[in-house]
Image (cartoon, rainbow, N blue to C red; front, side, top):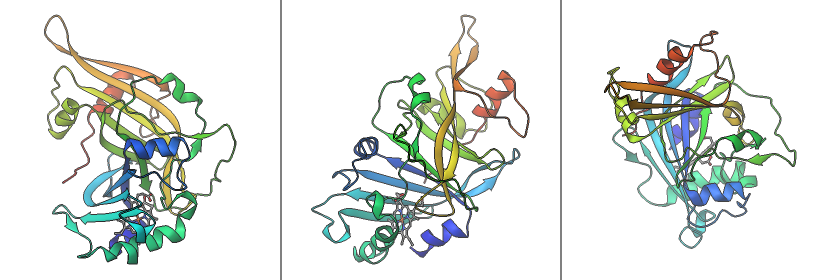
Length: 287
Ligand code: HEC
């Protein structure tokens, strides 16, 4: 358990927070006083590794943590059930349920009361850009939170026209994430199962039917927790698919859905370089 708090401060770690559709709906409707029963939030934590582009990417897997809302079952812990499994062998925290009462909820209660005991609630950002990104709704949504070793001083936005937005990846799964400190951005690479399998191999060959979405946000300091940065405004959405041409060759299509791609190491990439940069990401390892 103790590694949880220390890791955020002393180990440079990266996190992805997953919410089920009940949690996402609650966020969109600001309905978290209290959160509805069935809301489930999962946080996966990795070490940070810097790559050749000067970006931080997930390295070694550290732990996965769960919060499940069930008012009747978890009366002692504000209705939230907690669980944590560490290292690749998934060692559980606590032999009895009392760990949740003694550690998990006591800290969450103290610092995150404003948001129904959850720290990672998406910030209020301008909803307009997302109107252009029009895909089917799905059940699984992803919120991200990535930790940096710096304290941000950007104030929380309060304007009425701003709302809490959860990016809808339209059925695609997270392949990996990255943070760019120079640009102040964080990105997630999403893919279908074929592109996920492809990303697992070190091969550069591709097959028809792969689909990737590369999504970049500005990051901002988490108003509930100094030292943590979470995604703010959406900056750019890029989409890549592979298909078989009539001649039987695999071709790759790149589409800029919105925004402007960020430079890589200070350089704007051309389309081909951009495709390579995106599809060469390797997946974050989950045991
Ligand atoms: C000392 C304080 C502290 C304790 C103890 C603690 N947490 Fe957290 N927890 C945090 C902070 C701060 C965050 C937000 C930062 C982050 O993303 O990790 C967080 C985030 C989470 C999240 C993601 C949802 C959210 O609130 O943003 C889950 C799930 C979670 N904790 C589970 C647990 C579990 C399970 C335990 C007990 C084994 C636990 N926590 C104990 C401080 C704590």
